[in-house]
Image (cartoon, rainbow, N blue to C red; front, top):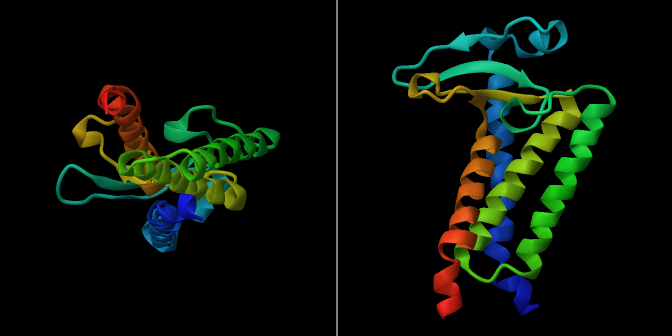
Length: 171
C-alpha cells in the first residue's frame, strides 16, 4: 500500500492533464471560426485565429501520432490507438511499480496523461485536435496540450534517466 500512496499525487496528475487537454479541445471544437467538424469531414482547411504575440490558434486535424508522424486512417487509426495505449499503460506500470523520486513520477504522469488525451480524440474522431501554432517561434508543427505534456514529460524523463542518473547512482 505504501508503494501506491507515495505516488498518489503523480497518479492524480494524469486525469488533470487529460481534463485540461480535453477542455481546451472542447473550446476549440466549439469555436465557429475554426469550423472544426466540417473540415474534419471535408478535409478542407480549418480556421485560424491570430493572437497578439508569437502564438496563434490554427485548427488542424492530425491523423498521425505526435507532430503528424505516421498519418493513417481506417485500420491504421486503430493500430495507432493500440500502440499509444500499450505505450501509455507501459509508462503507467513504470510509474506505479518503479518510479522512486518526484521528477520521474512527474515526467511519467505527463506522458501518460498526454497519451490518454490524444487517444480519446483518435477514438472519437479518428484524428487528434491540434490548435497551438508557434510558427513565429520557428516551431513548424501545430500541437495541443496533450502533445505539450508528452514532449515536456519526455524531456524531463531524459533529464532524469540520463543526465541525473549519475547523481542517483552516487547516492
